[in-house]
Length: 239
Ligand SMILES: *Cc1c(COP(=O)(O)O)cnc(C)c1O
Image 1 (spheres, rainbow, N blue to C red):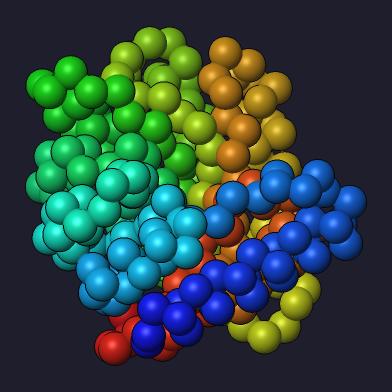
Image 2 (cartoon, rainbow, N blue to C red):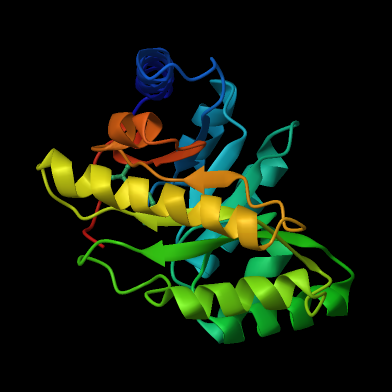
């Protein structure tokens, strides 16, 4: 993709997000765009930054580490990076060093390791709990009791370097609208329930919606859409 094509794609996607906000009676600017640059080169991230984008999402820690090392040398305003892919415990140290938020927290032991690595370097990090809704991925909490236990541990001060900010999900990968909408609305309800049970936590973000389903996600209350293909084109290899 040329820099111009990437700029045009950002323009188009931002317009579509604004239209979805308007259609569903949401305030203009209430949905943030996380640009998913996985499998695309540093050059494309830099082009996106020239088009005004600051927030990026990456799946793989090593890839993100190498790529954003290059990006940070090439730009003045620094990008913000969220880790969105399933995270192995042995990658947490590096993930914590390069990102401001880990959106893919899907099990208690990951919280413990994130806490340990953040404490070591004196960093506080935001996290989202990932909720399993689609059959296409294995990641995400499947058991609400387990999710509530993790939230309770955060609320009780067990992880002082971790700030839970929201929930993230990947909807089922289908052209049918109904299961996708239901997945998003179930996660919104879960967020409301967490708000009631754990008012001291500020779990306000809903990271939902990708290239093919973000308009539905916005209608269902998403506050952050994670978009790759519609911005950067098809990825060079399947995931
Ligand atoms: C790849 C990926 C995205 C972006 O998907 P597109 O369909 O390319 O927009 C969003 N979220 C997660 C967790 C991903 O892995």
